[in-house]
Image (tube, rainbow, N blue to C red; front, side, top):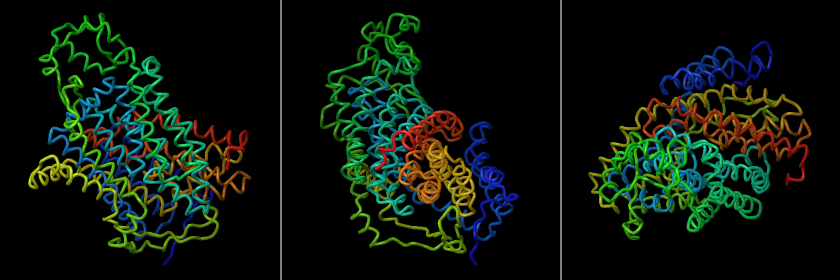
Length: 598
C-alpha cells in the first residue's frame, strides 16, 4: 500500500517537473498579489491546482492526496489557528477593558515618534514573543499592538511581518534548530553556532530596514542612532548566546537586552523631529483649528516622511484640544490618531495594570516553552493520531534522502502544551484581573471567534496546500531544481529554505522538509553540510513575511479581511532582497571566509 514519490514525472526532465510543481504557489501568490482575489478563494484555487498536479502529473493515489489535504487543513486549525484565537483574544480583552489606551499612552510617553515605537514593538518585543512562542504569535501580537497605537492597517501588518525575520531561526525556544538537527544528524550546538554567525548581520540591518520601509531613507537617517542601538544590541547578544551558551534562549535574552538598551538610550537621546502619519497631522491641525498649510510650513509633526522640527511647532494644543483629537484604532482596522497625555498623568500602578496582560503573556509563554513543562503536559495528554491512508505509506526516495524513507503523518493533538492554550489561559487570567465577569469573558471570546471564522478557514486551506505538495513530492522536485545549481548552490541554499517557509509557513517545517536534501547536496559538491543546513534556516526566516499563513495572521490582527493581496505586495520585494543578501553572505562564507564555519 506504500507509494514512492517521483521527482521527474514530466518526460524525466527535472526542470519541466519543477515548473509543474511550482504551479500551486504561482496560482496562490498570483491571485493574491496581482489579481486582488480574496484570500480564501485564492487558497482554494491554489489547493485545487496542488491536487490536480499531485493526482494527474505526480501520480499520487487519490486516497493519499485527500488524506494529506485534510491533514494540512487540520494543522491549520490546530495549532496555528488556536494560536491566532488566543493572541487576538488577549488583545480584545485589553481593548474591551480600556487598558489598551493606557498601553498606547505609556508607549507614546516613552517614544511618541512612530519610528521609535516601531523599533520597540515590531522588532524588540516581537523578538521576545518569537523566542517564547513562535508559529505566528509575534505577528498577531505586534500587528495588533501597532494598529492599537495608531498605525494604519497596511503598514501595521507589513511592518510586523518584516520585523519578524531575524529572530525566527531561534523561535519557540529553538524549535527550528531542533528539527534541523533531527533530520541532518548535526549537533544542535554546531547548527546554533553557524546560524549565529549568519543572522546577526541581518539583526543589525532589519531595524534600519523597518524604518526605511515605513518612512523612507531621509527619515531613517534621522533615527539611525536608535536603529543602531536596537539592532547592534540584539545582534551581539544573538551571536554570543548562540555560540557560547544555549540556543533555546537566544531570542528571549536578545530581545530583553535590545529593549533595555533602547529604553535607556531614549532617556538621553531624542530625534530632532517627530514622525507621524499624514492623517495624524491633519487631525492635529483640525483640532487646533489651524489650516493644514500653516502647520506644514511652520512646524509640527511629520507627514508622509517629510520631517518638520518639533521645536518649531505652530500647532499649540491645550488639554481640551488633545482630548478632542485623541482617537483609537479598533481591531476592525481604521487608521487613527493616538495622542498621549503627559507622562505624569499616568501613575505607575495604573500603567502596570494596563501592561499586566502582556506581562502575564510573556511569563506564561516562557514557562510553557520550557522543555520540562512541555514534557509534563504531554505526559498528561498528548494524543498522536495516525492519519488514515497516509501515515508511513508515502516513501521519500533518493536523491532527496540517502535511502527510501517513510513519511510519518501523525496529527499531534497536544492541546495542553500548545502555545494557543497558553494564550487562552493568559486571556482568562487577564480578564479576571482586569475585572471582567465570566459572562463578559465568554462574550469577548465568542466575538473573537466570530471575527476570525473566515480567516481560520483560509489558513486551513493554505496549510492544506503545503501538506499536499509535501506528501506528493512537489516540494522535493522544486528543491532538487535548486540543488542542481552546482557552484552557485551556496547562494541558492538559503533560497531553498525561503521556499520551504513560503510553502509551509514555518522555519521548523522547512528545516525538516529540506534539511536532509541540503546536507546530501552539499557533500556531493564538496561544501560544508553544516553551512548548507544552517543556511536553510537562515534563508527561511526571510520567507516568513511572505508565507500565506503569516499574511493571513497579519490581516486578521489588523482587521484587513480581503486585504491579503495588498499585504503580500507590501512585503514581497523586501523578502526577495533580504533572502538574496543571505545568499550572498552564504556564498562568501563557502568560498571566501570558510573560517566562519564551526
